[in-house]
Length: 455
Ligand code: UDX
Image (tube, rainbow, N blue to C red):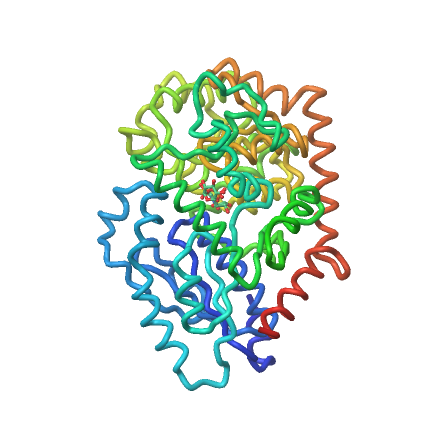
């Protein structure tokens, strides 16, 4: 931060950027990281945000924050599934954004607005930006592989792969190797047509934008990117890993407990377990995970978000017998400073839901994974982790305690795990190189900046 503050004082800001994430944690985090990257390159930053899940401005003293009120109570917002919420806000927010944008664009400042950078699922922002004659860039917070699948939805619907049918789960989808029907990023919701409509809008408005930004790496997604550059009509900027541009920021004191505990563990011995910011488990799933961990005999650090197990507040379902079994070997926390955890030498594996942020953070630290996807792009990511990048084991058929115990022991103590760890470290090295001068992400960031300034 001090280095950033220094650059703030020394640099004259040239242009302002408006960054607008969707109000979901897994989307806000990378947008804020992107804001830091662009700020360090001399742009002033305004974060547009909703009331719901609003970021705390006091944590980001170099940015300006501007509220785009969504007109829903937090109770209303939190009772909807995330996809329905985004679909509804796409319908509701166009006029509000238009008014706020005219206000922001008419301000007389020495750093006029150069562009809007919006989350890819904020479809309505393209029309608003066009009307205001403001270039709109898009941040897609997942990766190129899963975006190609979203782009294929019309074909998948036409060929009957989607909506996904139980009888076809194991079939390969020849148009999208190595995916099987069960890997397709369907989301179960009350009105599935809302999801297909949202995705169609995302593809259409990405194609109308001034450029597409990914928190990913050219090295990792070479083949998917070649296809994306053929299919989409816009420049593509793959500038990740966002979180490696800066040292990890300091975490709240309570999350330091995880690090202090890891400090007492042997190198590569701990399996870190976390299912991101949205996944919810049934009570049975929760108990199978607990006993899988207990029976594996491996040390573990397990994040259980309060409220993430149906019908339970936090840990009250865990029986005494379990707690007795893992005493001194397991640490359970409500939240962990994940990037610091993955970088810790004691961590030898990550049992993850395969949200893209978690997956990429793990790849960038060379930590092999156990994949436990639940919805959307997580299933595509899991298939790539196990079958393409070969940096993890996919828990795809059974997820009972015996299957979990076996996967943990395979990854942490058996020869197969050693080979997966070797591959993971090779990817880490490659990706580290991409941020260095001349590396692919370094070059893509330069082109993104030129592109914004030449609009
Ligand atoms: C959601 C969707 O589930 C996912 O499919 C999509 O790719 C992104 O949005 P989410 O559940 O938020 O993902 O997971 P993920 O993308 O992995 O992001 C979680 C972020 O929270 C990561 O950056 C992770 O480092 C952070 N985190 C999570 C912590 O820092 N500590 C924790 O204890 C848990």
